[in-house]
Image 1 (spheres, rainbow, N blue to C red):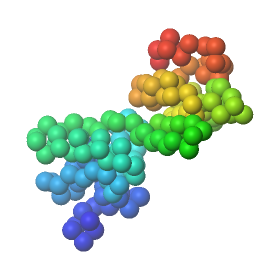
Image 2 (image 1 turned 180 degrees about the vertical axis):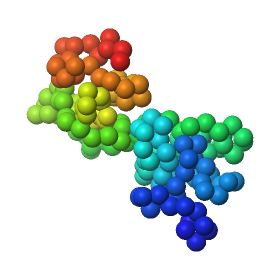
Image 3 (image 1 turned 30 degrees about the vertical axis):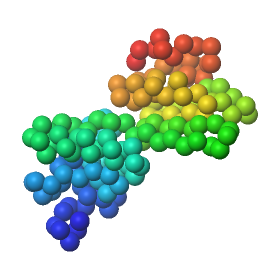
Image 4 (image 1 turned 90 degrees about the vertical axis):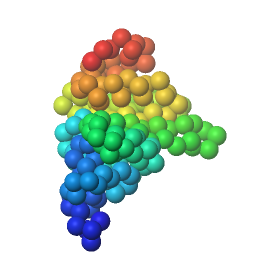
Amino acid sequence: AKAAGLELGESGGVKCSSSLRTSAPDVFAAGDMCEYDSPVHGRPLRVEHWDAAAEQGKTAALGMLGRETPHEAIPYFFSDLADWAAMEYVGPGAGEPVIRGSMDEGEFTAFYVDAGEVTAALTVGRSDDLEHARRWIANGGAPAVDVLGDVSSDLASERR
């Protein structure tokens, strides 16, 4: 990419606009080497996972067709842990973990909260919590910490 004259970002990936256009006007990028200006996260983001590459490919294709739109997907990762459980992660952020469920029993969600907002979530055996986290990451905000950690609270009713 550097030899082709493309500008590189801080991570060493190809620097792209929010619509995944590179510094070469007719070239778009997607996948592991793409570092784009994320309108959702307010900073450059590079995600090296096949799900991100597939989603970025859709955004890049729209741009190539003359219908540029910002890439607003929230990073998502998953793994099946043998016969034990499924682990899923959403978001690029970090923060203080708020645990919902039981880590000892292997069924929990760790919501990562920074300045009152959910920035990421890791679920093990509680995939229903993931969509709530995705909504809060996209829209900003989060329920109060005591609500996040209370398994008896209804996260679906928390509309932030």
